[in-house]
Length: 109
Image 1 (tube, rainbow, N blue to C red):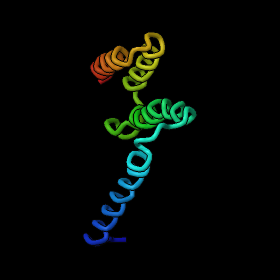
Image 2: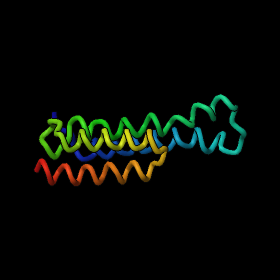
Image 3: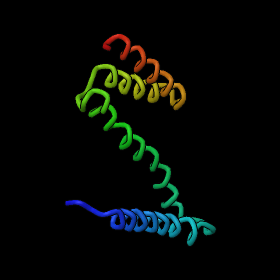
């Protein structure tokens, strides 16, 4: 099935409008109101839910290896999780994971 340029631009415009309305509904309509404590409690976990969803596919099915997991990325993920859990420092965990990935890619090729 082939789509024309007009259909593609219509889809892009609709997705853009939908994204704007979703954000406006939260920030524009209730942005100046105090949120209930239960909402704030749930919003604290948003990064914890989003970041693994972004990173997990890059570890499990990396594009650089044609979609098959490799030891360098698995080791870097394990070190990052371990250092992050042990130290409770995001910067230290990211640095340890990056060093492990660089070393692993050098070692494993």
